[in-house]
Image 1 (cartoon, rainbow, N blue to C red):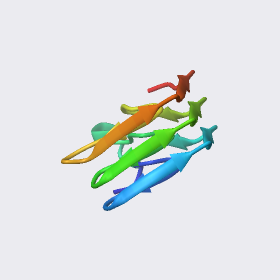
Image 2: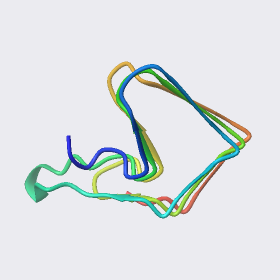
Image 3: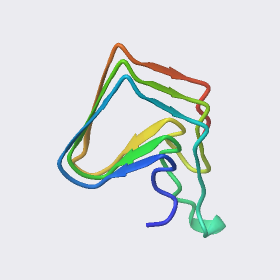
Image 4: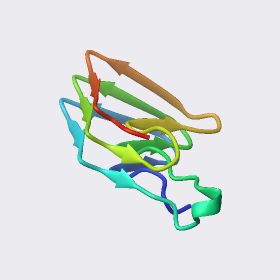
Amino acid sequence: NPGLGGGLRQSFGLGHLINTTLSGNTTASWDSENDTAAGGGAHVDGGRLDLLFTTVANNSATSHGGGISASGAAEGHARNSVFARNLA
């Protein structure tokens, strides 16, 4: 789907972001009437994404999840991480 995960999209498996920055990413939908753009920084639609000492800042999505979004059976875990100034 277009508009999912401006900086990162994970569809399966186990992902780790350690001492990482997701910043300045944007996602937008091609269909303004059915806007599904989600996860300006990252979108997880399967598997698991772990964040450790990670900054997610200044990202945007036109629908939801300005920083990070998840759908379906996806999991997200954050520890010692910063989320700031994300917009949806």
